[in-house]
Amino acid sequence: MQGLKLMLLFILSSLFGLARTSPQVPCYFIFGDSLVDNGNNNNIASLARANYPPYGIDFPDGPSGRFSNGLTTVDVISKLLGFNNYIPPCASVNGDELLSGCNFASAAAGIREETGQQLGARISFGGQLRNYQTAVQQLVDILGDEESAANHLSKCIFSVGMGSNDYLNNYFMPTIYATSRQYNPQQYADALITQYSQQIRILYNYGARKVALIGVGQVGCSPNELAQFSQNGVTCVDRINNAIQIFNQKLISLVDQFNTLPGAHFTYINAYGIFADILKNPAANGLRVTNRGCCGVGRNNGQVTCLPFQTPCSNRHEYMFWDAFHPTEAANIIIGKRSYSAQSSSDAYPVDIRRLALA
Image (cartoon, rainbow, N blue to C red):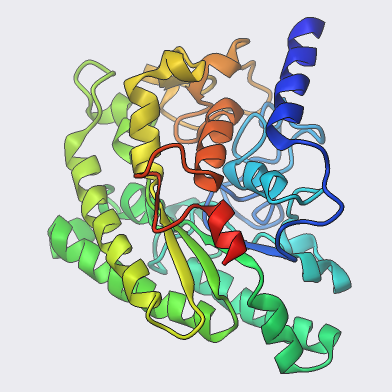
């Protein structure tokens, strides 16, 4: 076991390299859902929380609110950008700490305001944007004037990953939400993109210039959806993935649209394609189990998230999924690395995050 830990430390040190004296960008702001939430939901009345064991079993500080056994994709990206520390949750950031950015993400959040409401409190993307607007005013106060704040923000990386819950905890939950009866998949994607475009324009109007829009992953391949809808518990659910691909294609068009704005550098990170590539050849990525959670309950360990103090699988470095919905640290490292530095030309459009930082 000690040898395995030493090997993991060596791999991570090789991955991240030596700590840089200064990061490639002055700050990193993160918006999203449980895939990247690192503690913003810890103190709100929500079922979408992960601040208890076994979450964080492989994270240095233990359970932090991250929906993983260890690092999330944005943790990986922040280290690759050269930040010495992980980007903190905005709920815990004070004063000058904001100059380096913060993480606004909230588990169960969606583009639509009602998304995830069955899980209790959460900070929708609209709510995250309102919190960001407040943060921008704080930066104006810290830096002295709006021009200085705008100049600072124009150099920062912004990553936005929304939409998963608008499908998982809205459209494909017909007993609670009416959207699947109101819209066909094409219409729903149109409605989401229209609202998303308006929301992202707010981000641009408040200083964001280097923006990575993260596509929705293969939700139809998660243990939860496999447990519910896959006949053999292995084959991904096409009707879910097909609907998501419609949304992702429109997201690429949105990138082109925003890149016509003055000073804008938007890019699309193809999380769906990266995920699909890993599933095609998991062994090449060091993974062995791709259809069930390392912890959870029921078929594929896909019924619920990890139960408090539940004992997870011991070989979690071989698992794609940590629980019913979320990747393991091992998978997040792969996805984070490819988001930062594209392994394939299809990983990012038009540039990966490494090149976005240089823009």
